Length: 193
Picture 1 (cartoon, rainbow, N blue to C red):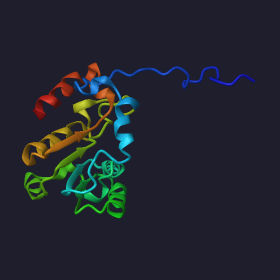
Picture 2 (spheres, rainbow, N blue to C red):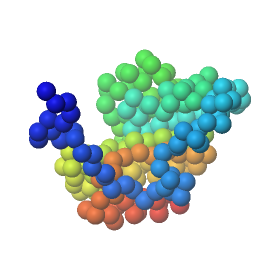
Picture 3 (cartoon, one colour):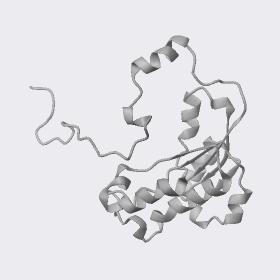
Picture 4 (tube, helix red, strand yellow):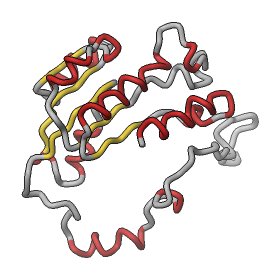
């Protein structure tokens, strides 16, 4: 028998998806082994294990993967999860059991301006706002999504505007950058500036 791709198998040829408008730093693609080599030769993480606490907060938290990611960078003992918010009660149960945020909340769409004021200032704010309004796997309704999921970015931007975290990381699907959602996508970076 020949090994390899089965006839009609979609896993054969890799299709390159159109990407979002990359930053100048990110336009070069993933970090290469040559770029990592100096750090690998040091035999320690490029991030200092000792130092001040890194206060993290997240909305649309899911499983809050940023916390273990920072741990993989060698920063785990410096990370303090100030708050996590997620609509899904199963995610909140996981967050409480595994990450122990100081504040655990529900749907960000139900959060008031006063509630944002009560939240701790953070060094790193993350949000993985819902992809269903933008994704072909969802209904792709964008801002017209009946569950208002397409407008959750507004709550994310409101937090950033009110609390001015030192840094923030937002993630979503590539479909957000497609032509059908171009106006909404172009508004997002402009809102954050």
